Amino acid sequence: MNETAKDFDGIAETAWSLLAAGAGDRRHAMHTPVVASVDADGLPQARVMVLRAADAAAATLRFHTDARSPKVAELAGRPVSVLAYDPAAAVQLRLSGIAAVLGDDPVADVAWAASTPFARRCYLAEAAPGTAAPEPTSGLSAAIEGRKPSLDDLAPARPNFAVVVVTVTRIDWLHLAQGGHRRALLTRQDPGWQGQWRVP
Ligand SMILES: Cc1cc2nc3c(=O)[nH]c(=O)nc-3n(C[C@H](O)[C@H](O)[C@H](O)COP(=O)(O)O)c2cc1C
Image (cartoon, rainbow, N blue to C red):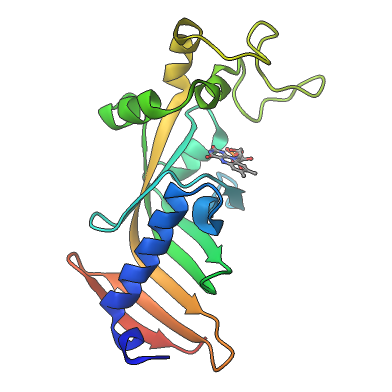
């Protein structure tokens, strides 16, 4: 481990650049982190979500979801854990923070407008995600399944779309190396991060 690794701000910077790379590149390992919450029964719930944006300055991560999905109630205003691992960098990030769900909101309007028609089509599902179905189904009507939807087709889907913003307050950074693993716990100070080495 070189000298710069002792610089916790530097570790935070590399962590956020990995997350930004994940958000920007669909082939990057950090494109699909696991987002974990706790459900109404107190049970842990983890699921893969596409990372849409990572803002180092604001310490936020952005995800998209169906406003009707069970995870929304588990995430809105609540503590969450986001887990990402990049084998190329040999870095695991365990991020903790608080989630906000934005539906009828300018942030969601912008994200909706920037999504492709095929991405937006998912939100046309007639029943909420997780609804029991009598047979295998995409949830889309036969009229819309298997074709590119028009803007008119997509208009009714907008209320089903929501943005999840996670404000990160802690990063557990783990770097795997043959010569010895390294681990640091970073706590957000705004500005910057306070760090503490941990035994891996
Ligand atoms: C590669 C991959 C990417 C996914 N991306 C998203 C996503 O961006 N947003 C989302 O809500 N669900 C996404 N999912 C589906 C979730 O993992 C989950 O199955 C679904 O949202 C239902 O979760 P819930 O019952 O906890 O609400 C993705 C699944 C996979 C396998």
